[in-house]
Image 1 (cartoon, rainbow, N blue to C red):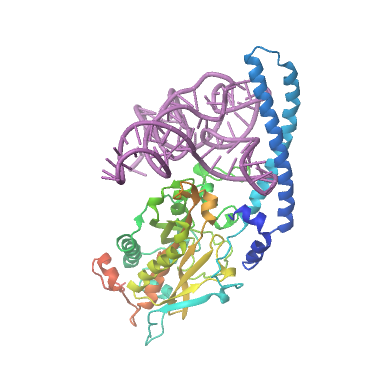
Image 2: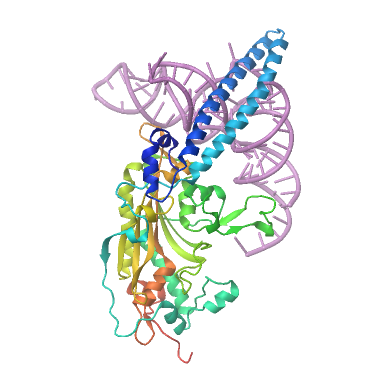
Length: 438
RNA sequence: GGAGGUGUGGCCGAGUGGUUUAAGGCAGCAGUCUUGAAAACUGCCGUAGGGGUGACUCUACCGUGAGUUCGAAUCUCACCGCCUCCGCCA
């Protein structure tokens, strides 16, 4: 959420910046509501002040044993009038709030302007793209060839966009997550966190998924209750990312200055309805309703957030370097950034079968955008509460890392070499190969 | 699922209808004293928002939401969290 003061004082500049994100702020409607709000709020408060004084007089008179009937009849009318003003004000304020919750974050000045993916800027590349002396297969062909990846069973159990892994592949998947967690905890100073996978509406509003992106989420109700017909709110939502759980740790909190920065890491499943992506990435593990991710979150002092963003992206890159997977880092342009981000770097890993780079991590500085929604603050050196800055990044998406390993480490005979750093997590196993006779 | 208890500022804690402007304490900040620090003493010290160029002023907020009342931290109802016990359960 943006600071409403900013909209009151500098509306033109703000709307211009929002336009670069393909968001068009409802200027007329906002101005109209603001004008009414101002007028009605003043009148309401005036009435309240009159009522308060009168009530005090009644109390005073009664304590002296005087007659109060004259004041009582006078104040009685006031009550009805006040009620109308209050209802009116409440309605206007909730409409303004609705507008505010819908507005995306302002892009940072260093973010390139652009309308979509094609305007993102590459800022660096790392690693050597493997040259194969055979036709590189994609991860589905590799996994199914090894009898370790089973989309048919997953479809039977659940449906499309689910997967089932077995044996060495399931273990490799676990090894990847363990390796990522250990690296971030032991080398990058993160606090390991186990979080709920089901969260409430307030949490999703805090990080910006709600109220705008409800259709991207999965909803859960206890005991098979329905909620749509009787207009109840859902009990829980499945997290689309651990960013929600980790960032909301500080919702409605005032954090001590000396405890900053907070750095959390969690390995969780993520659940996404993928409502807007029918027909996109339908093959393989790239786009699933359920996937695992190791998520990194920083809660920092506002002066530190851009330093923290660089740290965050380098923490994510470290994983790819350790696994020797080639990648490039992109700065997302204004038109391609997520709702809550002021600046985002994407890491894209090389996938030989597609002969292209695909997103494997996204690291964002949300500045005070989420903190304002969450009322997440710290006590500054003058003792005053001030909004924190929040950052989040994948470190990394586990499923896509598995895809990258299968494709980049594939051999001519259909086997896959296990990256060296993962072998300790695999009981020393150095290759995934088809079991004899199967 | 059943029974009982409980929720007040950053923290602890008093407050059962009317000068509550939420007592008192802790923590924090400033000062006096001191070579310096501690102690002691003195003062300041919640959040959000509105109006005003400004000194200032007004409003709301005691878990959340409704209600009763001229007036609610205080009374009523619902919900949520936490604690204790019973049942069930991994």
